[in-house]
Image (cartoon, rainbow, N blue to C red; front, side):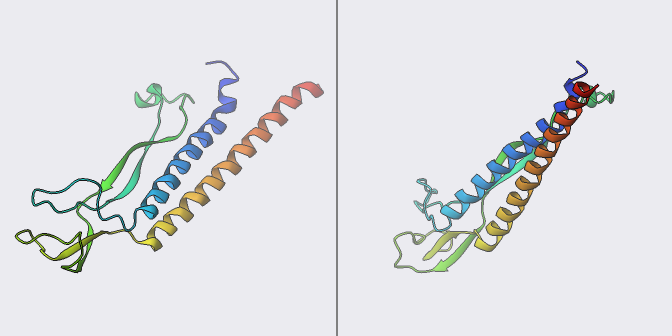
Length: 159
């Protein structure tokens, strides 16, 4: 590791968090856009539509191999990433409307009910606010780290 390698660690860490937060906001936007999507294009064994399910990202921290082997020597690789995006299946709002084209067919469980995605606009907006605040905080941290790096490099020029 070069002596200058560690200077940019905080900026790279904040950069990874910016990517994660942008991805999180995209997932939230997709959930909001599909709040009333009754069919994902597939059906169950009775021919009933399968509605959209809420998606949530699962975050993972990124650690260097040295840290994993408990040889902590300031060689931590940067921050966080989206490990996977999980579908929260099986949660639906049920509304009895047997005349609706998406109503459950006779002979199936909940016949006559229409399954709507269990997406709460209030929950999605709260998540969006958290993702946005986290994005702004990491952007500020990255800008601060860049200013500190410039000031540190400027010290050498004054001497």
